[in-house]
Length: 229
Image 1 (cartoon, rainbow, N blue to C red):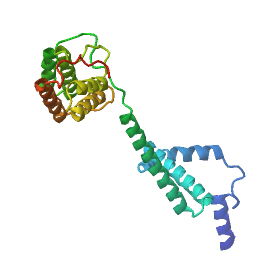
Image 2: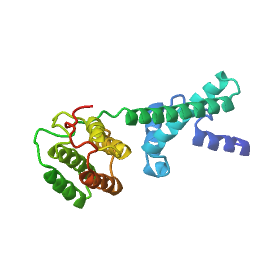
Image 3: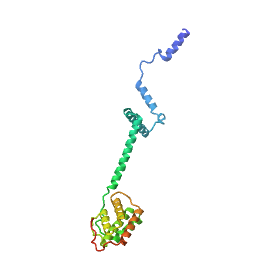
Image 4: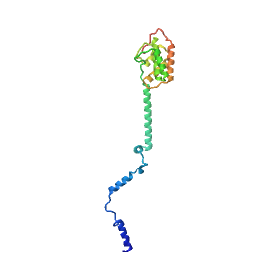
């Protein structure tokens, strides 16, 4: 046998007849590849679930933005202008609703179902003030103010009287304190039903008004007690 013949024999012995095998076990190969790729070493730097979700969300936002830009005059700039306009509208609407809520605060009844003297209301107001409960201090001072006028005979007792009604009636009995009385009634209503929070300044303003009204004398001492305005 020649050298070329020997070489062909060796090649045939190593690789059969030189052609690929007629059958290939694809399932076994696929399973081997799957086991190999499931090795944790291949997934050390994969994004976690949160990162994948965040990426998917921003991809969705980008697709949405691209779609809107394609349908909006001006493209991306037009979409940005529309978004800014919507944000400005939402802010303006929220501010308007807030102002409406503040201006439409209902006037609350001054007294509850448990009548107390003016001195008792003042003592309760001072206790609230010591605890820095300014809402309670303001409300109790307003009650003390009105009860004091009733005890002096300047206002007729009326359990359902609101803060606004009390302020108007007190102004008839003791003119000259209109603005302070309106402010006191407003502070009472805002803390009782308006969701607002009073402060030490508001409390001191009401106590000063209470003191001023206690010292004030009615213009006409012969007048009958003021009732509901």
